[in-house]
Length: 147
Image (cartoon, rainbow, N blue to C red; front, side):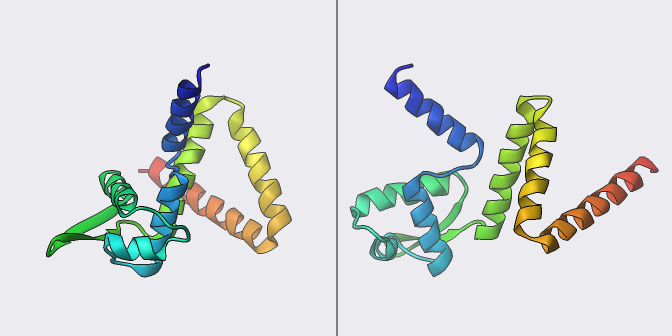
């Protein structure tokens, strides 16, 4: 597979799961921290020096993806995140899980096994929360089934 085909495939996979590129992640982090900002403010808060036009293009791409809202003030746009960081993480996780589960029939069992192992090793309280949420979801399914 040619380099450009691999690159396009990587970007396609990244977008499929709601992933952002490194610069897009940096810009979103700045906006989640600062709140409403113009391009110059974002440029000044980035960890590395970048051209104004590079950041402006990145903000425009994020706006077109629906991750930012913008409003015109004088001659500049002011950008604000359309989602909180937590909402974005939730959306990304949901997209990733849906994509993973739609690929292979046995992947659901593998995913659940890995999830329970990882949560169990990390935090017993989180394992209890997982159990609580599963019970809640079961009650919701049962209630829908009896309607």
